[in-house]
Length: 117
Image (tube, rainbow, N blue to C red; front, side):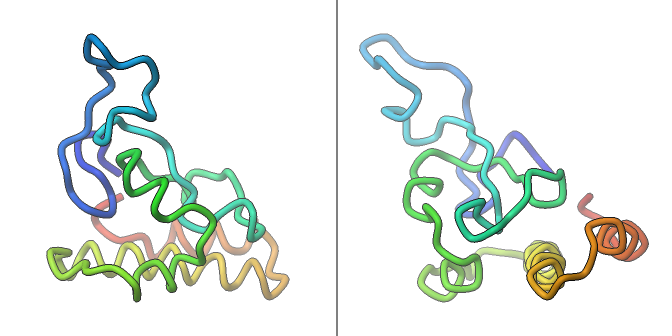
């Protein structure tokens, strides 16, 4: 997972707040941690559910289900590897919703992890 580019839109991220701005939320490409599967929908804070994205995408995604967010946005710039990474993360959380233990999901995710991790 890169802290250099937004996981969703690919914009270069920054952790610098320019003069004249009072808060990181006023900087569109500020790096923030995002829960791919939102906490409001039962997502966890374990590392497989965390990505870095820009404040713009974080605000736009909000607590929308990740598949709904994907369907409503144009992510045609995603490579096949990136799409596989996203779908891999989502599948893990669908298992979690179904009652599969976090330990079992972590074993599955770690044994079949995409190269990007």
